[in-house]
Image 1 (cartoon, each protein chain N blue to C red):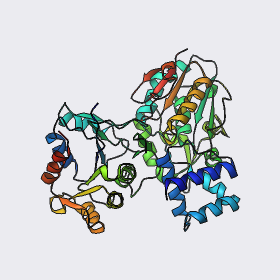
Image 2: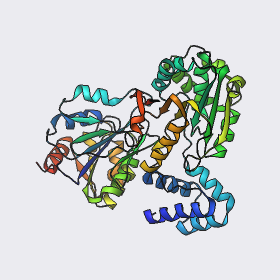
Image 3: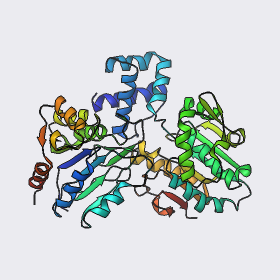
Image 4: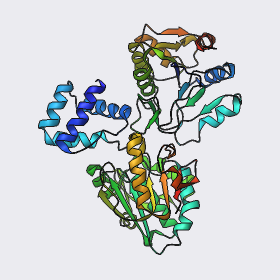
Length: 191
Length: 269
């Protein structure tokens, strides 16, 4: 099996779905680095995954992880509705049904923090459009642990509040347009 | 807080108070510890250690707070409707039905299950044993009191499960509370049981344990799934949280999947 130590985390709220879809539509079929996507959504609705799968390409390996499932290269994981998604030191997913954080479950902060602790400099975390403050603390943790923090530029965000808050708190974060984010991901892949 | 400091807390809780959290999922356990520290405005790691050793009341409170007690009625309506359509018809063939709800927290899912049994005409010959590690949560569960502000959401979830009646027939509203009807409460026996150390105590046709295994590492998940297997009658059913898997347990081949999307399994023999 092809090995990669790297991992990508993407967090988005209101207005982020079009950007996520754009990323998924343009990504190379050989993209080996696992991607973990956390999107805010309504609770007790059936899986968002089905919707994403139906409007993206059939060659992508998209999955909502089960608890304690190992993180595999080449997979794109979507955080299941109504759970926080964490990654343990042994690089397995762990789900958590505790209180919402910043009114959100899944919380972007929770996933970013836990992945920053495990992956350190191997993590690239990308925060997209949104209308609240989730992700701001998570981006701080990513930078503290030596990871790459990227925030969608507020001018290109349908809802700029979330990225603007993260940028204000984290001057070290890279501010990118969706096109630049896609370009960054392309050069990250070893193939 | 470093991982080593978390390990020290785990060691201390075991040594001083007999609670073993060493096989809990580390990432979420650490979050719980940080949450309790923030809620109780504890200044640093040493203050926490000092309080855990010297303040018995605080230590008890800490253990209650560290376990997750978030729950709701009819969470995952598709799970409950699968239970109604695929499990209850089989349970109906037993003269008396014994059910274990493990990790019941404040009881919301236990009462959801009791409502389904009532609507299937099975409640009168059912006995639900609901257990949790957390005695404060159990006390709350026994009272059957729910916050009236949540009733609207629970009603919607109840309707999504395909509920047959008016949800308001299952509770009495009083000021800010809704109290679960007596006949539902009387079908449940609540008692303390710690999945980490306690063993089998009866034989059941159905065990529900939803969103509890997620807080355990694979070692402890394996122990608990073996405990459930040994507590099930032949061909007994087991319902887990919809994102919980038995794939990593040594006894996975001793269960058949009844419904793999909502994680209902059945003991093979």
